[in-house]
Length: 377
Ligand code: NAI
Image (cartoon, rainbow, N blue to C red):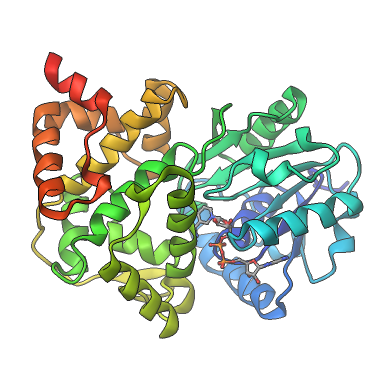
């Protein structure tokens, strides 16, 4: 008897694709992992033999002592032909994704679901050139993907049957799907994460990364913001901030100093966890973070809360869903609106207005809904 749960494909064997393929293999799917770079496949295999197994254990998801026998590592896209579900996790460039998806549609069967882990593009943008756009579903993980429970699932043009099947698949690998029916670059979570990172940009060079991360941990977050930047990768982060700036405006633009630093880090090969060093050195999948005294990060939290209110203002989704997305994506016991209530709306507005006066940065401009909340507080 075989223990196969079906055949799935994962395209892109980098930070996210390697971990996503591990989740599928662990849940007994037969996995075809495709990358254009042989070295990326080799690195993924090494992670599958150690780090991913440890994370599966830590997440309470581990079902097998090894996973590599469930994964075929290949550069041949034709191997994806028999898959019922294919996740794309390639570079965050619209043109690269569009070309890949058009090519993929010619290889896979008519009922195969195409799931995208894009951080910033919308499902409708990505399905624009497909013959059957209804089968392209958002399937967005948070980093580190094995440890965070969330997968944002959805898309405005997705067929109901494809959506429900994707929800089932997400649950079968141990994830908690959060459904988002409207399209917006950055979906739910990345919009407020990237607002926080844009706000953090104004502190770069003025505070030491361990100080900010100590403050985050004091607030109950399992990882600090600089540690998270290392998890994400400087190259990916720049592409995502640019994509959100293009769609939502200058509040997502990084200040020039921060942008310069990220570009330099990319040039120096300090990409973060995936290159072994970013803001921190990484050893066996863990950041080496020196002890430090926490600094004030209220303006960063306020920027994230402000963006969460903008999502409500735009009718992207409801308050409860935003709170759940925040809890699952950050492993926090409380939602972002609970954080806002604890801090007080007036305090948040005061902090934002002060920072806006200092920097002139749009990310610190309070939105109308937050202002109204402060009026009735
Ligand atoms: P990465 O840079 O670590 O890996 C990307 C991989 O895709 C590389 O191995 C590259 O060789 C491969 N690739 C590039 N073009 C390809 C193509 N045409 N066909 C096959 N393979 C190709 O990037 P990462 O961080 O894994 O990101 C992948 C996707 O996941 C992006 O869309 C990103 O926005 C998204 N994402 C990233 C998160 C993060 O924290 N890094 C979190 C959630 C989503």
